[in-house]
Length: 124
Image (tube, rainbow, N blue to C red; front, side, top):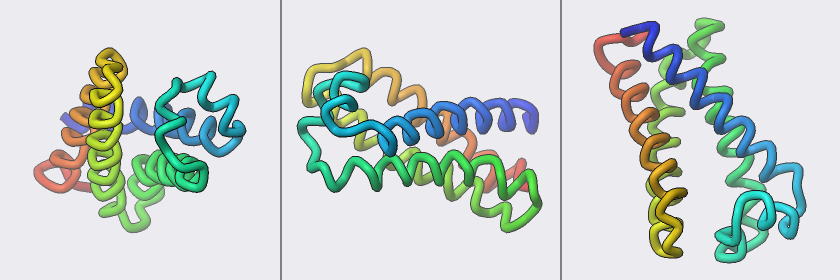
C-alpha cells in the first residue's frame, strides 16, 4: 500500500505542479485558451494564488516525506487538494463541463486516498 500511496503522491504532484505553474506563468487571456473558459468566471486576482496553492500542494505531497521534515504536511497537502478539487468539480458542473468535472473527481479521490493513508495506517 505504501508503494501505491507514493505513486498517487507523485502523479498528483506532477499534475498539480504543472497546472499551478501554468496559472502562475500565463496571462489570463492565454490561460482561458489553455485551460478553458472557466477562467472567465474567476476574478483575475484569484487565479495566481490558486496556481501558487497548487504548486505548494505539489511540493507538500513529496518534499516533507522525502526529506523527513514535518511529514504531517503530506496528508495536509492532500486534504487541501481535495477541497480545491471539490471547488473545481462545482465550477465545471455548473458550466456543464462534465468531462472536466469527472477528471476533477478522479483527482479528488486520489488525493483523498493519500490523505487517508498518510493520516492513518500508512503514516510516515
